[in-house]
Length: 442
Image 1 (cartoon, helix red, strand yellow):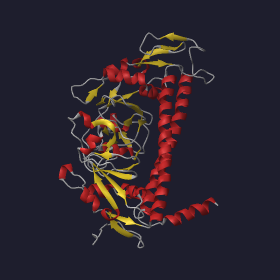
Image 2 (cartoon, rainbow, N blue to C red; image 1 turned 180 degrees about the horizontal axis):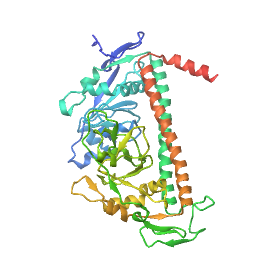
Image 3 (cartoon, rainbow, N blue to C red; image 1 turned 90 degrees about the horizontal axis):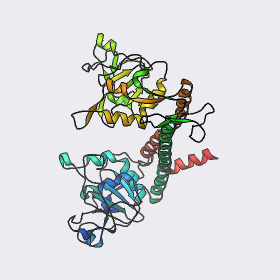
């Protein structure tokens, strides 16, 4: 007699439920002895738990030999299958991936295959992806909680007819393809932005809108780490374009109640500038808070963080409430020789990051600091104000396009979440959705 499944998800009344062990097969892997060289680096793909984050697995870096396979609990499984991370305190436990090649796994990964005409493996992938938090909550073992073969085998799965399973998987796969394409486009544009920044902040743009080159424009030796620069440019220290020394903020004790003022957290300064996040409640206003109040357009730089994050900058944007900046940030006030937006790009550039990371010091293994004296000594290439405007305008065009792509990606993720909630519970039947799409297109 089959075990009775139990699941809290509200399903369409026409759907049945069954346990994975009745409609599929669960295989848990193993690891050959690492001390025997002939067990390793041969022809058989061997998957570790970290590989589940690839989501769609066409290959894995690990390899074992036929001898290694025979000497361990690893089992070669034919595709398609769903891989699921069994252990770990991070995000790996409960994460699923589609396996699209024959492979075996270590003991921290299970592979699930579906029985023909009962369980579509692509449908199962989306069902388990949708139930990530539930899977983690089913784990056992305290601090090092983990899933097991028996937990997975007794997991209830909603079972519409096989054609509906396939249709659900097809709709969600289409959204996943759109997500993947958008992510690739964002990555490509990020690479373009990095190269563009390097060109614009070392070669600039002439009055005709062209990036300079030594073949068509005059350059000179800057006698600095910046190398050769356009003839029209000068090399300046940050100190030469400040109207007053960098000033640290103020970090009062955080209040538990709202008193009308926020304290910025270090996380507000990112690799992409100012982001209004990690905001804390400031206590009742006093003189020191008054001195640290921010105005729209104030230029901030972090003076303490990890080596990779220290020196992040951002231009404060009014969020509708008063804000102060903390002691671990400095406010820089530039003269009218430079634009704030241009200086933001300068501080984000590879050349400035190199200066910051080289000068940062600290006794902690992770946290380092820069001080006002060091900041004032940093050097940069300074074009005319007109050229600064051209440079920032070109970079803004690229930034706005990336932002548009990121917003599209966010909408796709929200669309996928909504579709999963509707289709994987039968709240909306996939046939109805496809009929609506067909009607809309005609």
